[in-house]
Amino acid sequence: MIEARHLRVLRAVAATGSFSAAARELGCTQPAVSQQMKVLEASVGTPLLIRTSREMRLTQAGEVLVRHATGILSGLTAAEEEVAAIAGLRAGRVRLVSFPSGSSTLVPAALAALRAAHPGTRVSLVDAEPPRSVEMLRDGDCDVALAFRYDSVHDDSARDSTGGGAEEWGDLVVRPLLSDRLVGLLPEGHRLAGADTVSIADLADESWIAGCPRCRHQLVDACEKAGFTPRIDFATDDYPAVIGLVGAGLGVAFLPELAMESVLPKAARTVTVEPAVRREIVALTLPDLARVPAVAATLDQLERAAAR
Picture 1: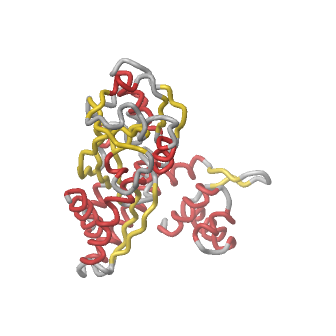
Picture 2: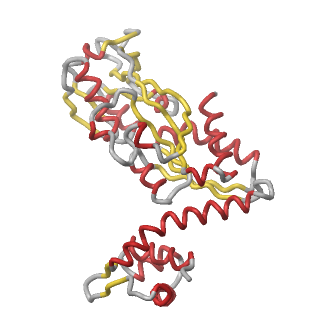
Picture 3: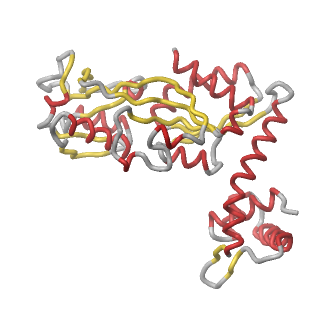
């Protein structure tokens, strides 16, 4: 009989590449990992690992078992959480992953409300941009992922299997939260800084400061629709860094309104850009996990936070 604890050990060994690294990740000793792997190999009746002096790799049987382990362990986690929640959410755990501007705006209000309503529910938070956050959800490394997609993405490179387009989320539960419009960010001394509305085409000759890879793609897409290719001089995932670069007069940028809520621009001005560019903010989870009360409560609180 294959036990869940043995599958967790196998998955850790496969991910880290050694017994000692797996032991550190699991919080146990290296001999314990080695012993559990021997028990698992005896249970399945075939070797799962090939050990040499230079490396450790999975056999074909090991690869098959690791591939199935994620789904099995995810299902077990859902079962454990649902059973714990029968007593009225007095216990439970939710692993949340969010992109940075969501972590600084939507998440704090949602988690504060969740804690007030269900003090026994523990929530952990990790920052990750899509598509990485969606990969983590599918790999069983989180329970809820905050993600976003742009309305006008049309390039196939942005519609990959890790969360680019709506059709690629067909295996997930999608909870729409809000529509987030991008605003222009200009140095305060810029010729258009005082304008109410700025056409994207008016910024064709500017130096640009781009954000995360998905946001960068959207910037190029929007500018090309306006008739030009932006000259990107700087690129950073850090929104305060973008604002600092713009404030120093080194270029202009597009930033989501959500990102501006938690950052005080210095020496920079926001303007409305036309045509409008928006991104849809969503919360994602797996169908099995959506039935777990702690996860469902987290989704509800995220939706309430987005509506405020």
